[in-house]
Amino acid sequence: MTEGASSQGNLFVLDSPLLTEVRGEQSLMAYPFFALTKTAWKRSLIYKTDTVSIEIGPGPRGVATIYDKEVLLYIASLLVAKLDAGEAVAQDFYFTAHDLFRVTGVSGSARSYTRLSDALERLQGTQIKTNIEAGGEGQSGFFSWLSEAQLHYTKTKSGDKRLKGVKVRLCDWLYRAILRDRRVLDYSPLYFQLGPVERRLYEVARSTCKDGSVQVGLDDLRLQLGYQNSLKHFRHVMKGISDADAVPDYHIVMDDGASVETAAGKRRTTASTTVTITPKASLLSA
Image 1 (cartoon, rainbow, N blue to C red):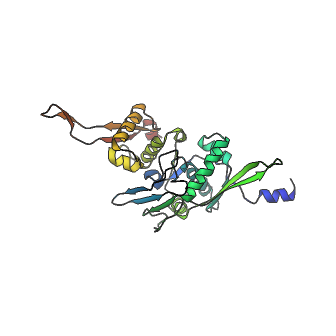
Image 2: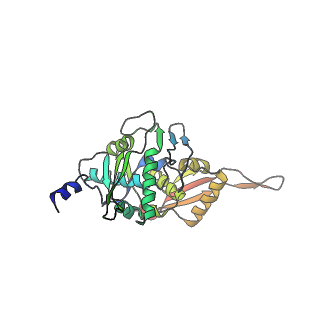
Image 3: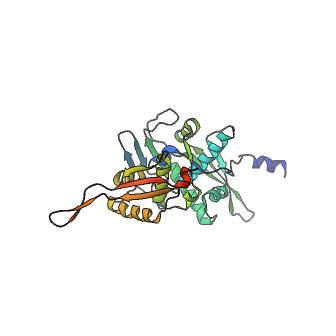
């Protein structure tokens, strides 16, 4: 290799490959920061409780989706791996799309590269506003998941583009949360094989079932997952997930409450539907 080529190759030092498990920040697991769709979601998402406020605004390509989140999980995992190794860390990351695809189980097709480009645009364009503090600091106003996102190409002799690497700059909020709070949890390798609702159920379970089973009302769970369709539709989806035992490491059980027969001969439910999330025995014994 010539000196010029070596200098060019060292313009960015690759942070990939990722050699540890995938890990994510706990707040991003517990709360609905992403649209549960594969296609563009163009409307704002709002989640509010007595203590937590989240407002998500769409960029030109819509709100970042649960599938776009894979990029953030990959970056967070790289950051935590560096911290664990005692290495110096910064908000800039440079990695290969090939390694991202390897970790998330995506084929390296031309369509995958197009989707990655779209995902980076949504992650940079989505506007987030929340009262959740990160690294002991709160902030007002909106921020984006990535303050910078670039695809770096080289050109072949025929003039075709060949993707060399991906360069991103992680937002201050998430960087502080990981660097200072270190509230990160590992993900099951099966996570990337799940559909959008199952992914969110897994994340909520992973972030809340630390000491055993958790029971939550069906409507409260719908809001925590960020599910945008009706409660009736959510009940149907949840029943399918529960019957299929489709969430890794956790059992999901729905309880529609007791029902009684009224004077008119109709059945009436006396309690609202609840969902019980229980860690599987293999997780409790780990």
